[in-house]
Length: 603
Image (cartoon, rainbow, N blue to C red; front, side, top):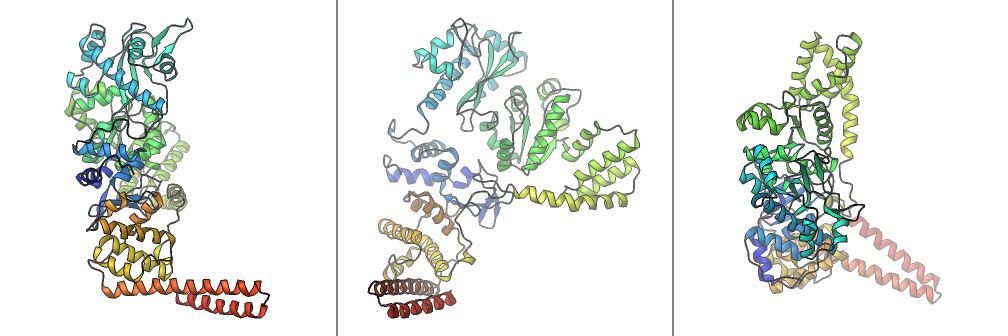
């Protein structure tokens, strides 16, 4: 933990933030009882085992064992140092921190810091050139002709890269960036004649931000016939097309609020929709949706609406994306854009209301989309191909969990092909047995793959459970600490428990109230911090009875003394062996066996 910021400031920052608000930016949480649950962001799973408690301001995953407070959550999610996490939380809550320049170890390598800085400077330059210079006039007119407003230009920091060959290179070099570094990072291009030019020159610029809102790459749209229509930055440590989503930083809160996300193929689609008031919108970055992106979306939301172009390529991409999203556990809908239009042109032609009502709200379910999609592969005028089509569709029906939805589509299929519902249901049952079993196996691939030392409490010996219960009580109730310290001290049997209780004694000497979040800040070992979070999640009665406390102390003390007694006997046995007294050694060995047997029975 950094001690460059006072503990008082750290506590002010931590207490100014509700952990559920921060976690909700990364995980779709649902309240169950007193806690919130969601899919763990640290390991793959299909059943929520990740819990956040608002009362204690901590999180814990019962699957992989990770746990901590809001600071450790942000450090883990964003790979931040302690200080950077504090800075981030302070920015959110508007707390002014003391000047911390160059006082903490950098989170990123020097090259990555320079890449981020170069993109930040360039983003500002491109935006300025677009809005205020003659060089950017052509780019600005292009955006105006596409219906983009000044407000949207500012929101998305749209820009223009000048045609002048050395302009960007000179600008960045004056800012202290070396030319070779800029070429290596892909911002500049070295030609065969040794001239250096801006990779994006003559293009309208779309800054690509990470989910913290920092520009890490650019998309450039050609407004002439020169070069490819769209050009993205080359990939780097900070920019992976398969992991980032365009506009995700701005859309996150709207996604959570609406309970669904709309995914597009292009930047202009996102901007047009956002401008029209539909703000839960994102786009892939010139590539098809990846499995990583699908799982990322599932953490935030259940329902994903795919709104790709209505041409052949768009339909194919919609199907592939839908498969990945369903595999990740999302409910998928597919928007129905007619006349081979793209979302941007539809909004421009028909307006925001028509887009919302006729495209988004009128989206097809995945099954309806699938039934239309798969028809193209069959000639339904031929009897054999009709049967194959029906069999294909029934296989998909078998994966529908809702019996109402399944019956609805069975009736639709029955009417379309003049087959009885009973016949189709009989056939469906065959696929149910095979496909449901396969689906169960597939889902297991997404359950916890992280090895963990967490042992289920009901499988633990009595003394272990007693130590866990006692520590859980001490974390939440300072009134029992003196009694435990007097009667047990650090004589716990589990090594990790000894360390935690020692920390607790020191903590309560300094602080007068139980505060799990603050206590976690005092622990630097990640495994211990996770164990504390796990212990803090143990459900307790409002007040734990004195009898229960006494029983726990007695069990722990007995185990400790018995273990010490057996340890002493083992030393005596070793001494007898060294003194060449086999009869004495054998007697001691029998005594050890009897004690261990008795202990085993008691446990």
